[in-house]
Length: 275
Length: 275
Image (cartoon, rainbow over all chains, first blue to last red; front, side, top):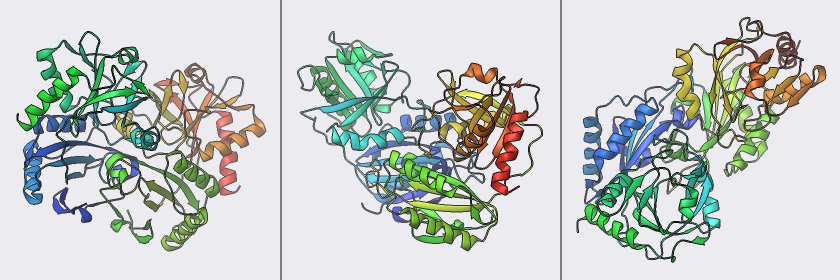
């Protein structure tokens, strides 16, 4: 990895020097939030949506950013200028801060990092194979640092040759650890969960695009509906739209990326990259 | 706070200099485990039990300590000698490490800290007031860094003038964020949950002491049993045994620490401090 510059509170420093004292509540108690967005040709993508969510996550988790939205944007712009990367991912982390008693929220530490990252612009021909796992993320509306379940599952995904995992709870599908999940029903309805999961920025855009062309709804989606779906796909900031063609070892539809998934991906990519 | 020495991997350094790079999975994803024990007169208390649990948590969370138990003990002893504190709390944290992709477990970072800490040796005359909250800790058998729920609840506890919170799930009581929970039934049975919670080291000792004198059982305990209890108390490394006299604003029994609670606390303190 290149040693890009990163912000740690008020210091813009090389990432190798970017450290926090171990008394931070992230290290002590895993407490914090973050958000993540892409830059393409040096320009942030859907920045306002990501900042909306970042500030909302902070409120939900009782963290005081102590900085205006404009100040955060100013730091992001300085970072982009300093690192001079074309396509990248920028992550903003807000931790629980240096807590004297290790148990009460203190003045949060704000970290902003940037790394080279380019999303492959061609559509996957084969689609993703996923597994399902019963799990309900806590504080599901907030983008917290809690990825215990996801990271713990990684070796199992490798073993099962799965690309990702879909969480479900009480018979309802929820989300992948870093992506939202959509299905297309046999009568061409586009459905995605509306509660118990993080509302992704890509999800919001895809819902809007989809509604122009197909019956589209954000509501509870059952495991039965998943199993009877004609198509499925995930949406995420780092993956845009990717088709899902296999679930728990069972092929979905004809095993190839579906027509509606492909149409939506084309429109979505057109919006992001220009057509 | 005094700047005690701490271990960060192979370095024994002042706590003010104890930092980890922000690429650590604890900062990025809240991923890690820990354990915590006391020293009294410079001697670790129940060290073997705490190390048993620490190594077990590591296995459960797929973290490779890369160090023998003897090596960990050696570091603890060096730390105790260096800081020369009489009564203290020692915390061992094992993080997910510097993960190149920020999502797969790497070589963990081992941090050992020590702080002055003395448990008040007199029994609380008034007992604790607690509230209940529906919550099931994930990976309940492991002592992970995940305290999102507990830290989030702290302002609410203050507002309600509660000393602690008892988690329950599916009608069963589980644990407090940093303590185990016991009840004494109207017919003098001592009960504590057996699943869905972390098995505390103090809990184990108290179970053994209690079994000598009272019908004692570790099994599912319902919210109904809690509400009908004659006495209740918590056990923890930093609190030993503390009576609970109020639950969700309702006084338990006659509102004073119960006779069996007091008897057990006396015996437990006798074991730890000598009688």
